[in-house]
Image (tube, rainbow, N blue to C red; front, side):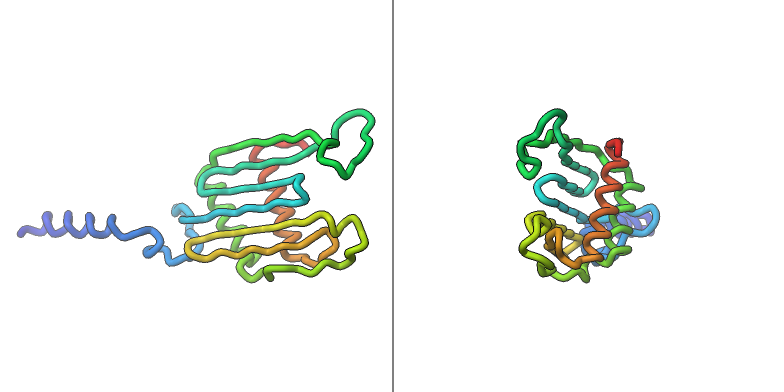
Length: 167
């Protein structure tokens, strides 16, 4: 066989290698799409950020206008949501965010600091999947969880920017 046929066969075989095997869970580099990344964050039933591949789904609530009988009730809030397709650079941001905050080192559960306060009722959860690895971290409003709190805050600000939500 001539060299062109062998080259063609080699390229076909290379294209058949699964992306997971090629990437082995490493962060994507410039020009590459991050493979198999999902991020799910929720807080107190009021905020949710979901990134699945190239899609962002962001849910937030705002306090309703006028007299409110119970601020602790979801009926006191208007629900908003937005879905956006993510550009390759926005997908890269998610991959860098995972590395920057070392989310795979977060503890699964952060104990509550004060069960007698309202803050203990505001549960938060962050679940990140990349390649074959998954990490879930849970905490509440009184937990000492500086890493997850900071990472979640940055993720929510990023989602706000993507959907154009005013402050």
